[in-house]
Image 1 (cartoon, helix red, strand yellow):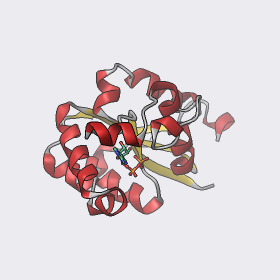
Image 2 (cartoon, helix red, strand yellow):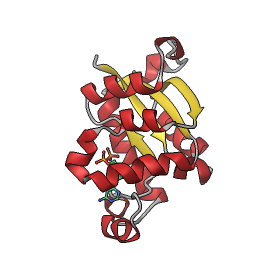
Image 3 (cartoon, rainbow, N blue to C red):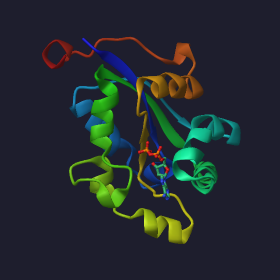
Image 4 (spheres, rainbow, N blue to C red):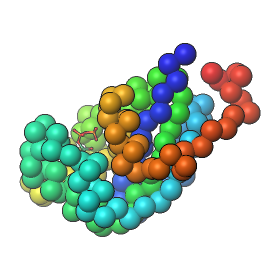
Length: 164
Ligand code: ADP
């Protein structure tokens, strides 16, 4: 079985909109396990470690700067989510990065709708509620940015024999 761990952040917009429970419910409902969970006000160093130069290359330096500033506006809820092919499964639950393109039924598609062009015109990030790691390599790095080993727990869900 390809049991994976992935890093999820409920971003400041998701926390401030009171969507923490709704987001967590969707992961739990799917049978995914929460292995770590905390609320954090990220300092600039942590945000920069999370949104590395890679984001500048892919999206532009201005987007990286906007993301780092956005993370100063309030706490995030950080989680490690575990399950079979958890990286792909969690990304699917999140939906497309651009809220406008995210399908209804996904977290982004149910709770946000704006386009890149709208965000760019307003010089803000697309407020799409959630971050989830996009590869095994990213998951490993990102988990280590937000969590110490001792904060990540091992336990059995009571429905594991049915779900996994
Ligand atoms: P994802 O979060 O889906 O992995 P990226 O890593 O490419 O996507 O982008 C990180 C975040 O940057 C996105 O979730 C979104 O909030 C924001 N973002 C990306 N591109 C733009 C853009 N052109 N304009 C505004 N915000 C953007």
